Image (tube, rainbow, N blue to C red; front, side, top):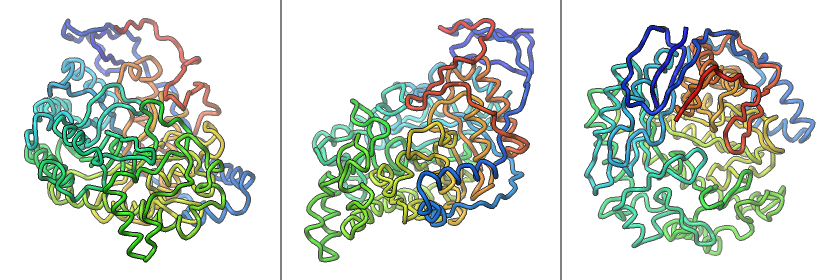
Length: 545
């Protein structure tokens, strides 16, 4: 029995294999043999994984790493998580066109039908500031999103909506370009200090600098007021769907929607993995804040500029005076600067989430905030890449607990990335698994819910099995939800789709009765985020245009 669809995104494994009439204007033809779930994703016993990882860390770094794990709350005890973990799927970045309309609605309808048949809970979409408010201040166009909300409702799915106050383009996986609203770009052209700036004076137009959060720099409104008005307009337009169809509002707080500084910009080749990045504190508003903070403790010289010995974007910690093992980061000046830099980020998050809480309270929709999974150089003493992003996390200091507590204060779910990554797939001194363990413990201690995402596009069973393993509350919080990145043609190809269906089913059972495959034979390229697929079986007929 075969299922044939005409669609720009195609799917398989529908329960109903009878002939389905699909509009003739779809751009591609896909024919798949119906797939029956074969074997379940399996994960190695998590206690065994923890023990192996712990022994490896002790071998590489000695007893001081054991002390670090105690400081960061890593635990060897394992609980039992019997809760269901709902799975959402991110929609394409260009789901809404530059004209404000729903892109390829018939293809979207077919894709949503497929996702529903797979047991997916719902989908996630970006509500782009640059699309919705592009025609002028307080002039909002929600029409394309309204069409999507109704379509999602018809399929019995749920919707997570991201308040995306950043540009699309220039980061991993960005397949289209959506700049900030034209009237905002006009203000930036008049006053370039409205955006983040590095020590060389390079401006980053991805989002507005948090340094001017409370200043009326956007045609008489502060950035926080602008974000609040945007969210209030959304709440008013979709109030009848909030809590029912729209179950979560993810509040954008920086580049890629994450609570961080744009310390590792990939556009124009500025940064490449696994460089340490650079501090983004050189616009006039950030410099004024630093100067005031230094004067307040009678250290005026500390406020004249940021650290001078931090190297450049693509260096490693030991190549710099600031981040090396016993570098400036660990002296009195370094601690002052890092407290100020990370403190400004926390204040920014607190301001925007307080506004969101006031707008969406009693709507029934959850609030979430995204924190980046910066796992490179995690095994070094300074955690340089995390520091430049604004996370004051070092061998001696837990930088994620203050973030988790801030989110918890507003009832906000901490959404964390890199849930699919394993240490053995990464270069030296990277540890996504250690980082995830730390964040799980931080959220548990702070009383905050934890949700997750995969950082890169992955389709292999190894990645899905790793998410299953980290979803459980074996150490720290388990996941309350998981959002898979992302809906595209590759997801519906052959074994990729089968893996997703099996993953969703396993997550619906709380990730129980699973163990990791003996090896990951998919030969993943984790630096650019795609699967080579050398060992993936060919489907009988695939013809996508």
